[in-house]
Image (tube, rainbow, N blue to C red; front, side):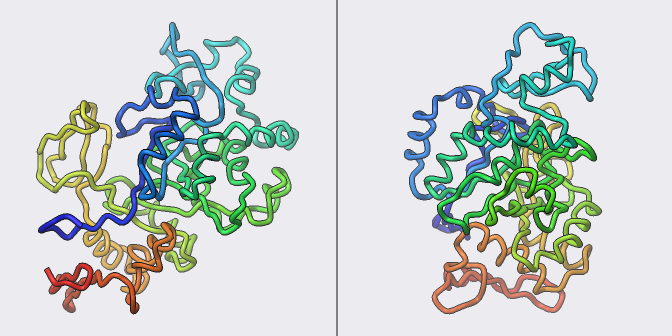
Length: 357
């Protein structure tokens, strides 16, 4: 706990370094080239406080593309992102005149409507060595920061054999820095599934204990359109099954136009409204929201009950991160972290670990 503040850090969630689509993150292209032994040493150096790590399926699929001397004049349908630097965009039809052949050969993409691809893709689960290291350490694998991964990669990961069949994958700030597509599905498509479809279980010979990733959404009403949030809430019955939660993604105070250095070298700024943090190119890096403002959004904009809103902000996050025995509900032996509100939802009292502030 930090002196004179209301912060208690119980565990850590590391976004990266094995990520494919950078988004607002610092550059991790060097770390992506580490041998697995160095990655394991990195995990050991963090220690037992590491609870979740975001990792990109396509970045851990064992495929590397050369970003040198590539013509960047491409259209959106033909480009994929370089695994080496994570920033430059390369064009598949510039690499090979036979686009379909190049896609299948170089990035293990396949026609997701062709069941014949399943047998060849099922063996690729062995290439997810960083993900396997996290599983072996009982660290939650959160799939994210990936606009390039495909159906085969996603479901091969979800089908990795697990000693602990209660282990659950997670998905980092769903929709943000993820792909949603009506044919070539990405991570974001999974948010609208309540269970693994039977045809997917059959196609990939899924283990009976295989499950969909749990879902987190950024609730500042800036990263996501409220209509998209509403659709997820409707799909998952306001999170009553424990698989949906909200986060702030906050990295700065709500001080309009404040400048900060993000990731040691990346310049970023709080927007003029004090709601989000963007870099010099206007790319979203984070939020200035609090869970309290998200709580008010859930009550007032989405008309959720206090019980449902509290579940999405407290109970479900605690269950997903495996700390429900410590927090997430009011019960004997748990942290006394409480806020007391009046009838207009104004904060009257704040208690942290049983002490009022």
